[in-house]
Length: 406
Image (cartoon, rainbow, N blue to C red; front, side, top):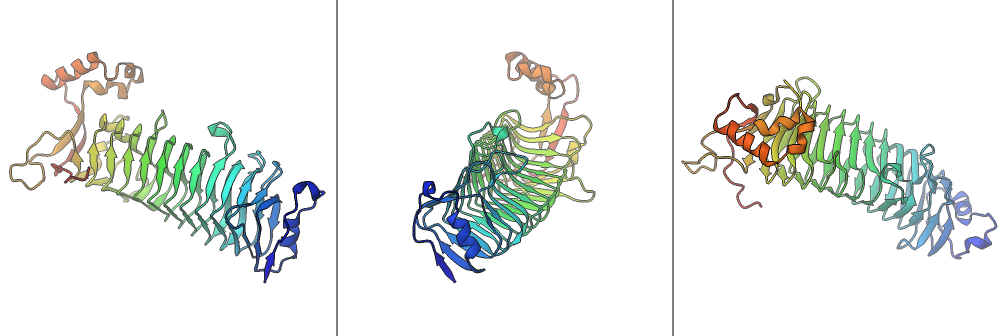
């Protein structure tokens, strides 16, 4: 069954009527509605399987600025090639461009979603796909914008190739088994924020100029691979963060020009679990790897650590940071030799902190960070140490080169 809305009726002549809602209500389940170019009154509700195709995004569904533009309460609904705009601005209502609830097999693809508080909100949605959409929020300050994409108790979905600009967060909460790949985000707060999740795959995403790259909290059993996080700056700036997160694989990611490349807080959290951190490129960050609280049983292997102001930071006392495992990483400050030319340093690489790290435990001293006074104190401490420096990491087989990768 195929329905085609042939006429474009200006909103001013509708006298409150909603031709699109009427077409939806009158259509049989499974119908295709093809919308010609024009503006259609929003705040619509879809309660049956349906396909709405806007053809090149020239069909615009426009809300009244007081609620959600499109609500989907049915499985097997597809929205594609539409422009969706002008939602309400109430966080309590979660005003959104598209809100999907208690549904499966929903597709939102190639839609342009603008001037909305929340972009696409999924609540108890599974086996659905959100792909190739452009999403931007209302022109509010960062904390008052809504989330571009939000998964809430939503499992086994695919979220890919979306472009998110000037929104707040992309969140995945209480949601498992999702594939999140090849998305792009910039000028947001959290590029991607996980809480209480598991078994997700996060791959080949690119996030630039956001406050935080990818942050995993209270989660487990997830793979993050091939992601690029660039220019996460400011006091909260970080590339990838793990907090109370266990059994993670963080592999082949690039964290570059960030305040902190990799931030690890009490992870892994579950006993007898490990986090595998392998093949990542930590480049030109203020801090390459920052440990907070008790964070042991992380395995660092074959990572490239180059051009950072600090390679390893531990900001907590007596947290046994040396219980982490390091092997085969490249350190640009390694000072050993390779006499047998096997590409591996003859002696271990040891990361220590001397007097120039006093600011870690006394933040007021950070005012002098990088100053000549601290530099001289640090030089003297290395030349004639009056106390044993603190060991942060020991890599028994440091790589001598990176084989022309950079």
